[in-house]
Structure formats: structure tokens, C-alpha cells
Image (cartoon, rainbow over the protein chains, first blue to last red):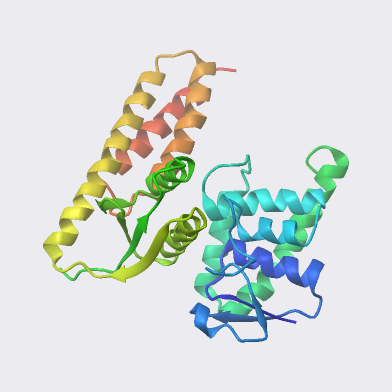
Amino acid sequence: MKWATRSAPHVDRTACAWLIARFIDPDARFVLVDDADEVPADATAFDMRGAELSHHDGDCSFETFLRRYDLDDPALWAIARIVHNADLDDERYDAPEAPGLDVLMRGLSMVRDDADVLTLSAPMYDGLYEYLKRAALLGREPA
Amino acid sequence: MAVGNWVLLAYRLPREPSTPRIALWRALRRLGAAQLLDGLVALPADNRTREQLEWLAETVLEAGGEATVWIAKPGSAGQERAIAERMQADVNAEYRALIEQADRARDTPVGARKRTLSRLRRELRRVRRRDYFPARDRGLATRAVDALADSIEQVPA
């Protein structure tokens, strides 16, 4: 399936792309566009104005995805809190990882093109997911 | 001096309910947006500010209001300077308040100092995020908070 979002992806869009590829659509292909009008007719848009899979009621797009696809994995919701704080900067959650992740993604997008950013950020989210999953199982910070 | 690009949000929200109005006001304040007129705010344009105002436009629409986002250039360098200086002054007042709190905290017990330090660091980070035209006392505020941290380090455990 084809998915479209705005170019220059930072934390919310990279996290959504990772979520789609790992949990929603293993055959996902991504198209990055500069304007909503450039979204191909056969693509599902996300994290763009007017898209259904976007910011809603104070949620960032990643949170919207979790709700729409009934993903209730606590480790994914832990990532959601980090992404939310990094993206909206409203300090709704206690997520000290957020400013660090935000800077990493912004920096990455300065030195690599969009496709590379999605490719390189995916294993970082794999790692974040694994870490948070172990943290939830152990009830403490994993070594 | 060449003028830069600004991103503008023009909006109108129903007077009631007041919750979306307050949420919008808070978000604009957090971003440090300049209020040009009632229902028109501006920020220097970059990827982040543009995206943030686009999301706010969406929330205005979801709340039954009207909103459009524009990329614009000020008509003159003087006009841009006036807005930038006003934004700078607002941010500088926030730095001054931080400096005062940091200085005052140095005379408090070490436990209270630690709590104040983490609060001031968070606040400093917030203010720096909306400091688009580095305000005069940015460095002073950073040093005042660092000095508070140093004063805690020097206390024997």
C-alpha cells in the first residue's frame, strides 16, 4: 500500500512511518510531498492538514494511528508520549526523552534526504520500542 | 536589511465555548507568536513554526472556526524590525524573571534550590524555544541558572 506525508520528516512523521511499516502494512511504500495537492490518488495521507490520520483533539498523528488501528501495546503508547511531547512541545506527558529524540530527528534531516531519514530512523525506533518493552516487563530501566 | 519570510495564521473562533479559545491562546503563547491584530498572529517562518501554525489552524477548524495560513514578507524592514523588537522585549522580560528567581533561590536551603533548579531549567528551555531573535539577556539567564546549579554542587553531600 502507498502512504503519503509531507517532506522533511521529523519526529512525528518518522515515528508514524516506522509504525506503519512494522505494525500496519509490511509492504508499505512512502511518498513524500511538498503540498497536499501532490498526494497520489492511490495513497493514504498521514500527518498532513486535512488527512484523517493526523493531529486530532490534541493528539499527534502517532497517537491517532494507535487509536485508529486499535494498537494497545503499552510500549507503543510509551513511544506515543515521547513523540507527542517532542512534536507538540506542550509537556502533556512526563517524557524526558522527547527533546533528545526531537533534536536527533531534526539533525538527521539536515544531513540526509527524506528517503534516507525514514530508512535510518526505523532501527532507532526499533531500539526505542525494545527498550520501552523491556522497561515495562522489568518495571525498571533495562540495562 | 532584507526582510525574511513570516508565517501568519488568520483565524476566527466562535466566542463560546471558551475552551478552544483558551487552548489556542496557550499554544500561541508557548510558540511566542506576535499578535498583529485580533485574529492574526505571526512567527518567523521555518519548518517548525509553519507546521505548528498549520496544526493550530486545523484545531480552529475542528472547533467550528475559520483559519488560513499564509507565508508573507513584511512590506518594509522597519515594520519587520518593530515586530521583532516587540517579540524580543517579551522574551527578554521572561529571561529577567528567570534571572531574578535564580538569584533569589541561591539563598534558600539546598533541597529547595534543587527543586527550583529543575523548574528553572525547564522554563529556560521553553523560553529559548520561542526566542527567535536572540534577546539581550539570553546568555545572562543561562548563566544565572548554571550558577544556581554550581551553588548546589559546592554543598558537601
